[in-house]
Image 1 (cartoon, rainbow, N blue to C red):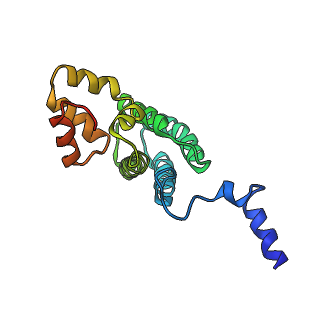
Image 2: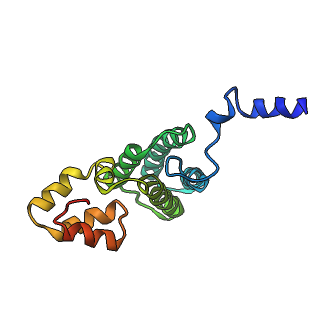
Length: 178
């Protein structure tokens, strides 16, 4: 028994169990374990793509991607929110262009799965206004509301993972969350 306790402490890397373990039931504060795995697999796939690509410019970009993704995984493992970091990675992906995407196709697919799953888990327990603020879309939504642009309001509300019924309710109330 003493041996098991010592191993458990070693596994905790000097931290108390309450600091290290996520709650048994998912409550929206912690991402699902599959989120960690999806991001780790994404990083692994970018690494594989880096090894297999024949394009020098793609190797440079893959190095940049890995340099941006590793800290996201570290923060996630430390229990910190990574919504802003996800936005930064999305911006990086959007401003760069892999020439031969095939070696990286699976990595980008895993990134999308991670991003969507993580954002849904974090935003799920928030009000509409909290979601808009967390995703840095509040001002954009307010502008769409002021201009009575329901199509843009719908796009933004869907971007914060509101279901269609909730989107319709918010739009019918003139963009007010209630």
